Image 1 (tube, one colour):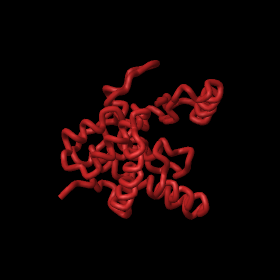
Image 2 (tube, one colour):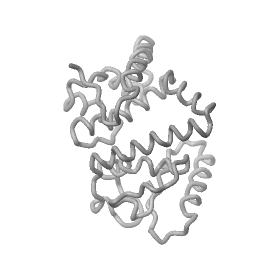
Image 3 (cartoon, helix red, strand yellow):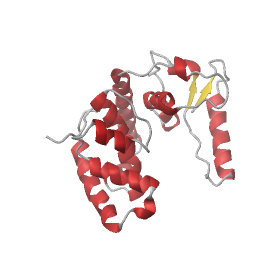
Length: 218
């Protein structure tokens, strides 16, 4: 993440995005660079919620999760080390920003129905690469809502869910998503098919559920 001083120029976020795009183009996108750009005061309560719900502000909609990531595994590579002074978000904070993300999706539906229809189609039947990304990322939220603790590591989330949330309904899908993410050559065809089938169940199980719903075996 990139943290700006509060008195940075008004167009600083735009300038940094342009530099990120330029760097990625010059390196054939071999170097992953975070596109989350905040001002120092954005990291402290009460968090801003008056920003425009648009693609350019997607990083603001993900603020609580990014703060968790900074506190869990962040390393300061330049400038003041502010990680220790940042307060962890509350459950209400996480829920508030999840609602904002949902409003953004609904706004996209009204603004560009064709694009939104394509987005829904992709969500319902994504490729294996995207299934793994979606399942790993959502498991981090499930872990938080189930335990009140945060885990912002895709490499660790399958293990911590297995240990701390043993009744998690989609543990096998999560395990295979981890396997695809870190050992893709080891994933056999039957496992890929299982991921596709199980993801459809995962998607239907979550549809129309509240933000803090966690699928647990009963």
